[in-house]
Image (cartoon, rainbow, N blue to C red):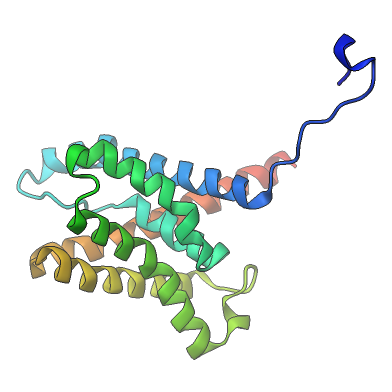
Length: 192
């Protein structure tokens, strides 16, 4: 890009570090998943099952698991801005209450913890991008959900029935995220 102020010399924009791009992309996907769950899934679910307050399809869990698979422990930092913005939107003045922050931290830590345990038990080679199979990814996502539920039980005194709904919602959210990614890749392959 040239201009009169630079004497006609070519100027380039500064390069944005890949980690910053990943952080923005992952947080944006997390926010999108949260809003899709809140504005599309929950109203439909409330119409069908008025007494439920937990989502049977929690899309953010899919984003957390996929981010943990791709980025490991760094996924916590990449998801944190999106999680805090969602807290501000949905919890308002309570967004930074200790119990809400503990629940947020537990949710963000659960998936990388599940992958770290999976790597130590099954070997890192089996969990690499391009090698990992969907059933293993779903199993690790379920383990992450269980870790999250244990922490939420400590934090909020979560009831067993609520925990079952969260486990179902997390699992279906992950499977839905995988289907969305798969369909997106198929669409890209057709256009190439």
